[in-house]
Image (cartoon, rainbow, N blue to C red; front, side, top):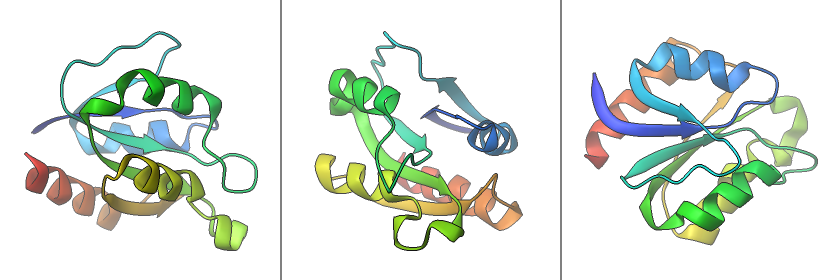
Length: 120
């Protein structure tokens, strides 16, 4: 099991299903969550490539410990696919580790586990 903490938010359940496949220590974003250790963020995208308000608020309180971001989305959104993860990567100057569609597949899971090992 990878020891790096995964922090995530899920609107439709796709991110939750993906996180469940990872076998990594994880915690779902709540309104006043404070994280005192390094973490990787997994987020969905809302609207036209926007960061969800819950994720934005979380990062305003916890951005000093973010080590990377992963995006979930639907490729039907074209250029807006995983736009939130791209924005977060630029804003907080952290690597965009991966983008996956819907709840991901086995290749996505393995990629994330490998990327998390590289961070630790």
